Image 1 (cartoon, rainbow, N blue to C red):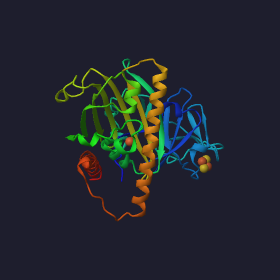
Image 2 (image 1 turned 90 degrees about the horizontal axis):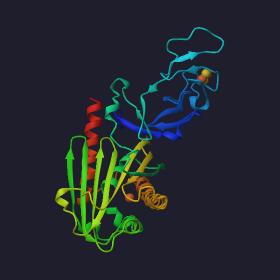
Image 3 (image 1 turned 45 degrees about the vertical axis):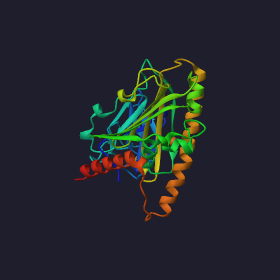
Image 4 (image 1 turned 60 degrees about the horizontal axis):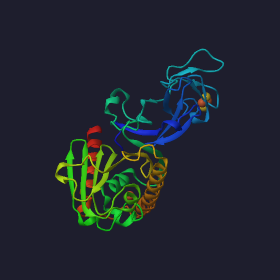
Length: 339
Ligand code: FES
Ligand SMILES: [Fe+2]
């Protein structure tokens, strides 16, 4: 059902403290906490003694103590203390997950720990000196994580779902291009010589029409980076790709499955203009949040119909090409993992 030998975002860095945090990821119960030295740890959230969730216990120095009979576990999941006895059974341990703190996110490896390689974490900076990061958050969605990837790879929905923020009516006049490259699928669309959408109008300094670009890349299993921006109409050449001029926005999207039909959707946004301007940050955060709330309504309603009528089929249209390519890429990777 899920690709496991890969990195998923388990939490924002600030969410994980010395108070244990319970989170179901890929249908597995996980507890996240920080040791006294602030290193973050992820363990199976089920005590090997009598199955109490360890998240109901407490962090004691570098150990997580179960809240029922006081067994203590180290960061490798090994039981290191049993109150009232010296001998610790060799199988007194819980699963521990490789966990890496990078780009303000905690990345977890849910598959074979031997294969965990932190060089596979994408180079998704939230600390680039030339970009300003808009406060991130996550949403909990009652939908399958692949619906989120479909949504991000098909921005034609901006014209119907997000007319108040990112959308304009003319998007579908401009065709998309789909590229497939190993572990990535890319959707590119240029919208030339058209009015800027409300968000760009309020954030940018545009007198008339603009050229806009949307370059959306999904990396297996489901990490999506959007590069979007605008410049004065006629001042850039789409053949040359994203230009240096104009305003640029990056959107980093990391949906992590909780279960088959529920998802933690982590995201953040960065911009390269109006650096340090708190008003722009506040506005952007407000508009982005509004945009995502609009998506939540769509995605959850869509999932409900799919769940209620699982045997009904879909028809495909041109704008589905990148989403279909991303699903094929993921199917291929899940199949390879289960060989
Ligand atoms: S259930 Fe955890 S110590 Fe008994
Ligand atoms: Fe959307």
